[in-house]
Every structure is written in C-alpha cells, then in structure tokens.
Image 1: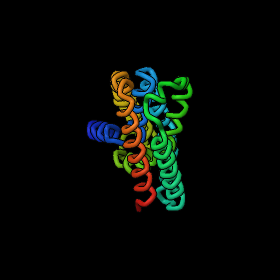
Image 2: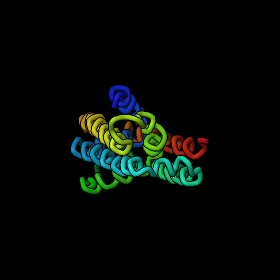
Image 3: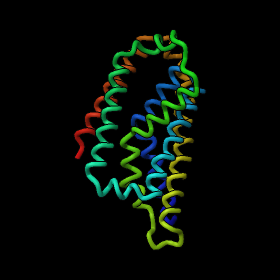
Image 4: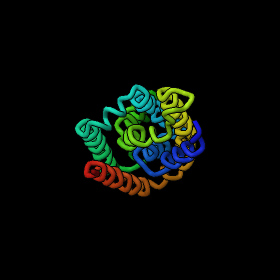
Length: 204
C-alpha cells in the first residue's frame, strides 16, 4: 500500500469530523458513562465489517454503476437519521435518561452496529473513496488491498471513537447535575441529525 500514510490521515479526518456515528458515541457516553461510550465505539467499528465485505467482494462497483441501488441506500440512511433527530428532539434531556434504567451494554452494542450499517457517509466512503487508494497493478491483488484498507479504517475508528466515548463519560456527571443543559444538547443534536438527513436525501 504505497498510499498508507495518506489513507490513514484521511481516514482519521473523516472519523473525527462531526457525523451521526461519533455524535451517538458521545451521547451514549454522556448518558450512561465511559463503559457504554466504549461499547458504542466498538459497535460502530464492528459495523464497518459490513462495508469492508461489500467493497472486498466487489459489490461497491455494482452500487456505483447502479444509480437506483445507491439512491435506495441513500434514502434509507437519510430516513434513519431523521428518525434519530426526531427522537432526540422529543427527549427530556440527560436527567430523564438518568432516571430510567440504563440500557444493557449488549443492547448498546447492537444499536451501534445497526447505526453504522445505516450511515450513508460510511457507505459513500467505502463505495467511492476507498477504491482510490488501491493500486490495480500492484504486487497484491485488488481484493487483498481492499481488505487491508478496510481493516485499517476499522482499527483507527476503534481508537478515535473510544477516546470520544471515554471523554464523554467523564463529563457526563457534570451534565447530569445540570439537566437543562442536557435538554438543549438533545435539541441541538436532534436538529443536527435532521439537517444531516435532509442534506443526504437531497444530495445529488
């Protein structure tokens, strides 16, 4: 992989950029603590196996050549983001979340995996951007190169998202003592999710 460092730097930049996945990791860590934030990070990273498998098996090329298939994926992801936003707008803040029994870590992991599968930003990255770092006439096969790039992206995602989740868990206690701040953070996150969903749905 002659473009190893460039790919790694680009992957970290994409992972750090505000988006549905890292916002949910932060929200989970704030609401339930560091363990839940860390498990959410692992769930989102595990979901990347789906995108890596698609790219490795060549389905990415099929989606890229089929506007209808890609449009369906894009609209499904947009609908999912809007649903998350509406749910966040209706939330009563971190204080209400603290009063309810926290979700089991297995449920947190399962929801995070599903959230990653439905994230159109990740799908777009693997379908359009990932193949740009493959060397067709290199010593390794294209399939092996795609697999290596996908695994590298997963590993850096685990590191970055874990830092997000643990940091969010550390400030969660402070926010829980200020419930009104939690309400407005939920509203801000909800509006952000809805805006992202609408932008994804309208993007050409």
